[in-house]
Image (cartoon, rainbow, N blue to C red; front, side, top):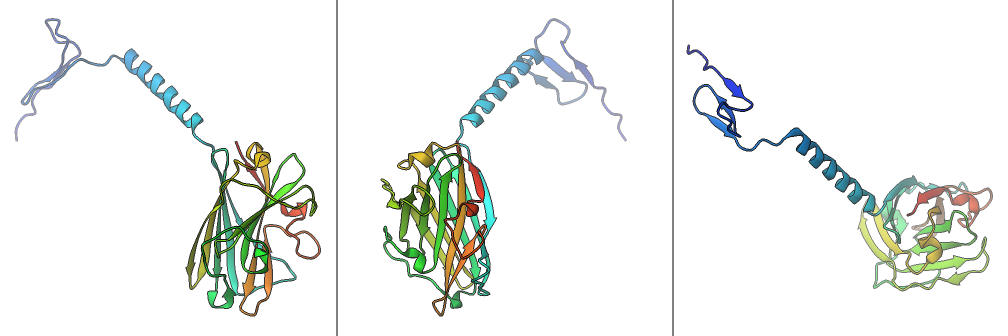
Length: 244
């Protein structure tokens, strides 16, 4: 067994050298130009401020998850689960992701095509969103079909004043299909919908229509109002999203 070498540490070696030395055995290490604590502390404060400012300048993202349920008058045992993820990104972008878990051999789904604006999409399997400003009248209806067709309507009040919403860019749709389900994703730009774009909070109703193999329709929503299926009812706008 060998004796351990003696270790000596000098914060400032004799002779006025500006080096730190760790000595006492072989090898010998020198650490050049020590960083003083005051300088290090200042650097950390500056770096922290820069990181904080960068985070504050990043687009705000609000993500919500929801599970839709069938209206009591239209049960459908073909569907095991129907979930939705909603993301409010940047100042003018809403992203919807609908995930249908079902026996797809018993669900009628439109074939995907070129995609474009179309009416009456709700007559077949279709995914929907109803979007309103938290403190203003009127609302918008978004329809997204697995065919990649879409529609956006504006209403001035509950089921009144319906009109086509004029937008410069069509929603971006994508669909993934499998034996056990289907996923549809849609991104909607709000740049041409200033009421929604400039709102700090949005009230949103999420919904879907599922067509079975016999042509029957079941109506799925985040919250159902009393009475017959009605996605337009104010009670269905159950989700609030911060949008800045």
